[in-house]
Length: 301
Image (cartoon, rainbow, N blue to C red; front, side, top):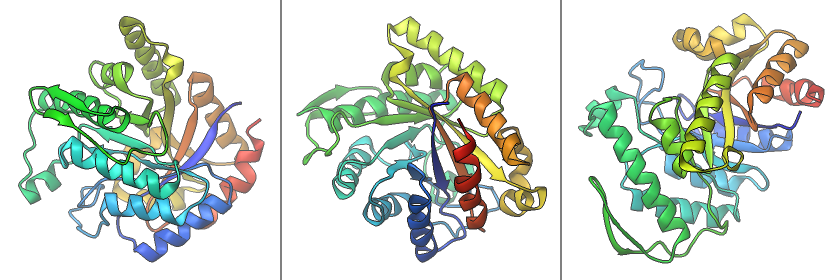
């Protein structure tokens, strides 16, 4: 199999010290990717507000690591103007020495929008914002100057300097919507990520992405494809880590024996996955992540 592995470490119910130590361990265990999420409140909809801020932690990740890709899965286009996130991404890439990856999404967690008074329009509007936003962000990160006039965003001779170290700079789309989200990914994204889907659903979405690519004349191999999965060797560990959202995670959960995990990973790879990324949240199962690195990854032939 040709697949790379990463860890998506949530920022909820943890501390900066715990995360920084975990990141260094994940890198030492041989993973090639670490990413952060973008929430202000608990992503499990408990209403808890103990959640670290994404951009600042993305920058910390860039500084605290030396080798891994430093990703975001994903920044909500509704929280920050494209120019704000583009300039942040350029600086984060400078801090990382060219290892940053920027993921964008349409946003979904209505309770935190409501808590801060951030407009939460219909899905169609949010997706049109994402469509414009990724065009603006990619242009700012890769072009000398940007002129753009859209429904939501306007730029006139807009610049983002200094540029990222990495050129062209990779911008990903997150989400599984087959009609619009995957069309936006086919048109504009360098990578695509979807969380907690079964092997069968992932394979179908990869095919839909390929159909959208064909419609716009793009080679689907130009888009990196990643799936976020839960990982727990036992049911007790799964319940402890994912709690009330375990039913939503279960279709994409790696569990059981090493061979069972390897077999499921093989299904994702056969369906088109370039990356398998473990979605971890506090209380972090650091021993389980290390065991996965030592036992499962080497068994993926």
